[in-house]
Length: 281
Image 1 (cartoon, helix red, strand yellow):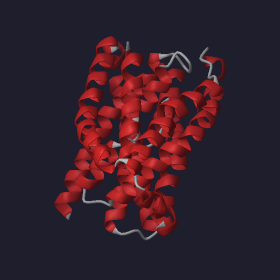
Image 2: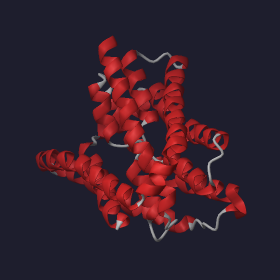
Image 3: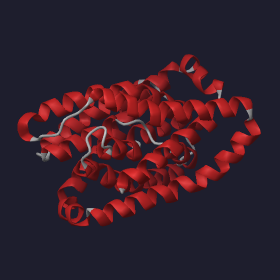
Image 4: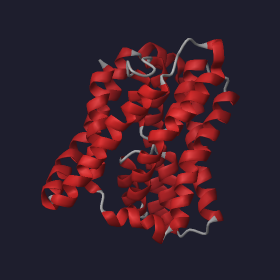
């Protein structure tokens, strides 16, 4: 049931991201390499390492450990663009980082998850077909982004109209997914929430701290710094759930539980951050 909901949602999110992209967004990589580097280093390198450290420190069970690594190595969510706007961050930078991370993680997620699966060893019988994961990522993420980008380049007005509709559908769809998943696994989620919720909260706070530190090291301005904090702290939960639940990949909904809890805590903590940023501003 879960996979039948999450796959269309993820495809729509990626298609909608493609509708918002412009060639100028990718030129930012050359025009402003420091903030781009800060965001990608934070997301692609530091966040999985932080997740590994936090998961080990909390002595997570093997399946939950895989789940927390999976959400950490997923790309940033498209909602990060909205949060950057609300925090008066750099929206153009946010869109570029979301697009870049969505493309780069097509290849880094299989590598990182292959390492993570191997690291838990015989503690779990879960297998990772790396080829299937790569194919699924390309079909569900790269292809919809490219289709959306093509429509934006050829029919700009139509792309904007479609985006105006999809942006009102995406969040309710994610809420529906989270609700159905919670009802299916409510006993496990309620039982594990005190420890797993704390673990994930620590992960998000450390990710936000890492984004702040990278921004300070690279001497980024306030708007860029707020965007980096949001991008590093806000990952694509739908992507993680799709990988965990897919019959072609892990086919294990227990691995998706950290992503559901992450989605909840991520929105709470980032909304608090946005409120503090606007108040300080």
